[in-house]
Image (cartoon, rainbow, N blue to C red; front, side, top):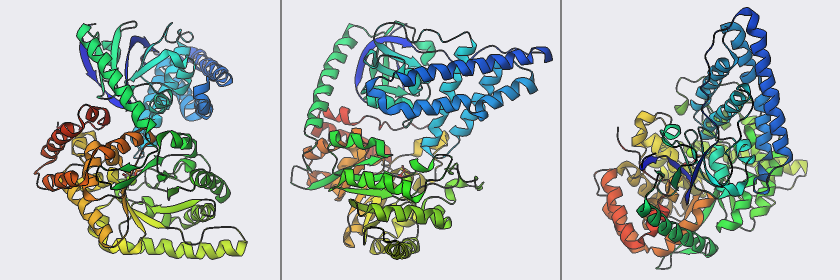
Length: 589
Ligand code: PEP
Ligand code: MG
């Protein structure tokens, strides 16, 4: 291996130096045609492989290493996948109908299912392609004559085409120094596990299997998203210095994270956390968040059955009482179209991104929505709860929800169930219509939260799954910056607070600009909260307001980013590179 740099997407920050440990190979096996006589033998081989994988998973479940104890449900889900007729049944049918060997049939089935998941709009469901692929790899290994020894001895940097939680659980957590995979996304299990283990991880690392061999030395830079193969003496010395500074910066940011985030000139910004499910509550105390700025409620709806009011109430009440006296903002169900609930038939809309999504889906499925709102109203009696509506385009949507809430309160009173009186009701600003009518919308609600992820997509007219236009996903585009300013100003003119809960809230450029615009709160994934608070304390509002002023005159995003980067590098020094993780801008084609 020659000294070289390859790139990936950082999903867990930090730096690591170690020897490569390949976990398993790619799913690229034999392609053999078979005869009618050999069909039963191939089918039997696949069934045996599945049984072997299930037995191995059961063993893993029984001896889960402590830092990964919360992932038992994920291993159980993997076990389900090993039984799932869509995977196993389809592969078995393929052997019989196409007369191809088990490995080939498995490979085709895995690819087909992965494509299906990858085409989904919801990032969570899209990342489930990774689970299918990981299961395919395990089955492939078993078919090839049993699992190869996993990873080899000693600590190292795990390299795999893809990883499943079960893969990682079979290893000593302390032996994993970093993780590199060719597949996966920011919400993949690789990402979640790496963050739990607190090791740097990159996904989507191109050219990985060919570039690095077992035992070779690499530096994983989870801050800038690159891997340095075969580092020389100078690289190693630079790595040691960077790691030391980063770790002491991180320790300091975490140690001070409970202090309020107050700019140098005394302006306080509330820094809250975005949570995907109740299990993530354990991250709350360590990150110093001032409450929950976005609780995504989709997770409970991803199973085969729709959750009932009582189950939802139990989840929301547990979250609300855990977070009290701080506030938790529950976003009502944000699904629809090809983010379809498994419990509902797909709607088959011609253009799902512009279809029955978010609040539109809920108002069109009022019974389902009412069950969620009842559960939320009841949870309101257990803590400090606010409600937030996604994908709003029209004030009438807010008025409809207020009317429904009014009816539900009467209903709950009649049933004698404890519930909140009036809960703060806010909207996500993430459509061009909401931006342009922010003033009238602000009169209908108690707060705004700007969802920059969707706002950028809808404003820039790009399909979030279309990599050909990914370079246009640019929150510093003048159209986005002007929109943000317009929304913040409109909210303040109407006397309501405004926050940002999309990815831009954890982009250092976003933190500086939003402080300059007078944002009241920022909300981000737990790992970003200490760094955002730390950064806010280093900035002052006048400098940032001036930066906003300058950026508003910029002709394009590139010029804006360059300008902000220069200013922030001067203000923050080396710390800027610690904060800039994960916000690399995709280049133009
Ligand atoms: C957003 O769109 O910015 C947002 C926070 O919502 P989600 O990412 O869940 O669509
Ligand atoms: Mg959104």
